[in-house]
Amino acid sequence: MKPRFSRKIVLVTGAGSGIGRAAALAFAAEGARVGVNDLDVESAVHTCTLIKKARGRALPVPGDIAVPEDCARMVAEVGRLLGPLDILVNNAGIGVSGTVLNTSPEQLESILRVNVTGTWLLSRAALDVMVPRKRGVIVNTASVAGLRGIADSAAYTVSKHAVVGLTRAMAVDHVKDGIRVNCICPGTTMTPWIGKRLKEAPDPKAAMAALVARQPMGRLGSAAEMAAGILYLASDEAAFATGTALVVDGGYCA
Image 1 (cartoon, one colour):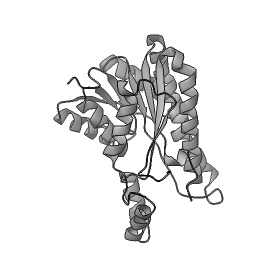
Image 2 (tube, rainbow, N blue to C red):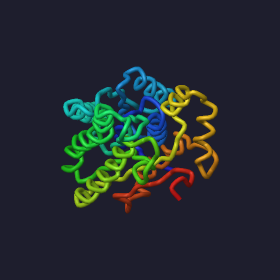
Image 3 (cartoon, rainbow, N blue to C red):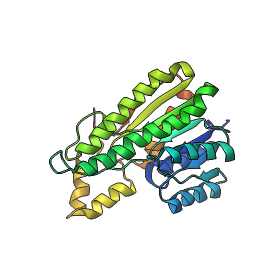
Image 4 (cartoon, rainbow, N blue to C red):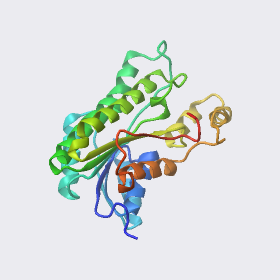
């Protein structure tokens, strides 16, 4: 069977760890040539090393998605060294705990800069390549926090609601251009970011137990499970899906 992404050119942001790394590895395993973006150059290079060890093809593409010039450079670099971009995965994101009362304006601005402005800017750079070619796919990593309120995560919830809204706006704006835009809404997923938050908790075991307790399936999701959803949305199997928010959350939003 021919791999789903044979000869496809993919750019994945935040691919130095977690869901982004899992998605980059999965795309490469299915035949794609993958641009691996991360602010941490060493992490991006390590993901590329893992892909190459598995006989895949990858290119580290470091850069800040919230800087317009970096976005344009990354898309151009992928085009020059791998080929014209077919699929963009806007996965990079940050978060912070807090309510409106104890989240500073600076923290809010920082989260919006990365999660929303970064997604907007890199999508714009990708669309500059995709629209003239009349084809392309964009998959955004949103969150269940983009569909409902999450306690003690006000700024993050605002940002992910914006990602879902931006996904739907781009979908209707560019469906006639032959471009599909969807997002995945992961539930709580065991990633290095969650691991860091658990280590910072006064009682890490209790914090983990609390996270698991709110999951109907009784466990957290895995990065590989989220990557599988991303690849589905990017594949021809989802050819009739655009503007979709795919929930992969173990029943949390049910």
